[in-house]
Length: 307
Image 1 (cartoon, rainbow, N blue to C red):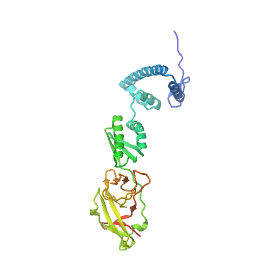
Image 2 (cartoon, rainbow, N blue to C red):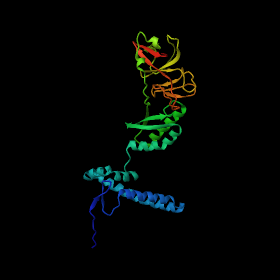
Image 3 (cartoon, one colour):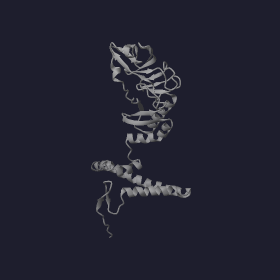
């Protein structure tokens, strides 16, 4: 009767156990990469045969792994060992390659977004996955995607379709508002009082006359005779004042579209879109609405139009 010699196990570079004669994970990975490169260099007929051999071997491996996993899950004692094995990165990779273990939703969603990102970037935009919660993927659109024009809507739909169709656990997508850049206001602009009008401050009117979710145009004149056409934007009770001029061709913004939910302001003339609370142009990076200092004093809105 023949006998077999069992080699004592040793620790592999990945933390698992392997025999002294077994190659490490890095060596195995290199062999796979080299074989894949050689496979691509074969003529079509030889490559077809090699790919069929590869598919057949992988099918056998998958069938064996499925049997092992199924029986270990059915045994109470073995189930705990199975869960420990799945936590091993090499084992997890192997089971993922054979579609036995599904990747977590965040990993799968980021893989899906990799496929659509080139199309977004070709239009000057991008997307960042923030979190997945209760079947909803929360994303933040960047650049030209975070706008109100028809092209930006198309790109937003592209992201939503890719995530809903590509990630089984995702049933909806919610676009988070962009994070506006902070606006610096000089210390002098904080002085609202009896001498305010003499320092270029002009009263726009009561806060109640600047409705939430709307923009309010106003023609202002300071005591020194400086005039300014302005728009006051109210997004979730956050007021911001701008000169009433689009950064594109200085056309008025009276009929601009304010999307309070996404925090964007779109010029009615050529569709240039801005962050409503910072004035940053989302359609053409580098452009900016001219923001004017704004303060509220005793229930009135004041805007500084001169010095």
